[in-house]
Image (cartoon, rainbow, N blue to C red; front, side, top):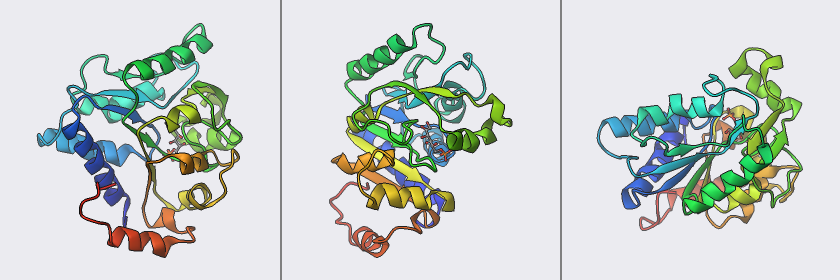
Length: 256
Ligand code: F6R
């Protein structure tokens, strides 16, 4: 896509189409900067009466451990402020891992059960970390992993310090859906925009499948879509092939 706004509109098209054909759809929602324009595009469409989340549900991808409820940098608060509160999800329809649970392992297990009980995630949004992580599955995460505790790499803590202001305030530990959990979603949509994502995108899409680049696990998914702007596409080797397939996309295929 030429720009980050075009990326957002295309991904919003896919989500609009999903909730229109399946109003009870279950979304997997990522935090961080990458999906924010998509959430804004969805909120704008909601205000224009083009879509509704009144019967839909959403599961967060991950959460920091130890940030109290309502902490502005908790992912629960982030999704509330940037998406859920701007549309019409009913009370209790947006769930996240409990980063304040006294028994974190039980909370991880309960989260897996809640996702399964919902019927599974129809469309999982993802960003990609500069180290190739998806969710907070840092390099060398098991490609079969389930929801569990992970320690953040120093690179990820540095990347996320911009949200906290001070590196010391960035938690070291998180709960994240595992790679195995993510791969069970029926459609996975990874959003990457900007030059800093060019290298991890190329490694994930065109590099070997390897735990050192967790996002490369999406190569195993039967319906994974990577939506990039021009800058994030800069390191892709087969970029002309991708442009050609997009330009010649059959009209009977779904948008993504
Ligand atoms: C967020 C998440 C992370 C981010 C990734 C990219 O829920 O799980 O994997 O998607 O760190 O972050 P941004 O989009 O801020 O560059």
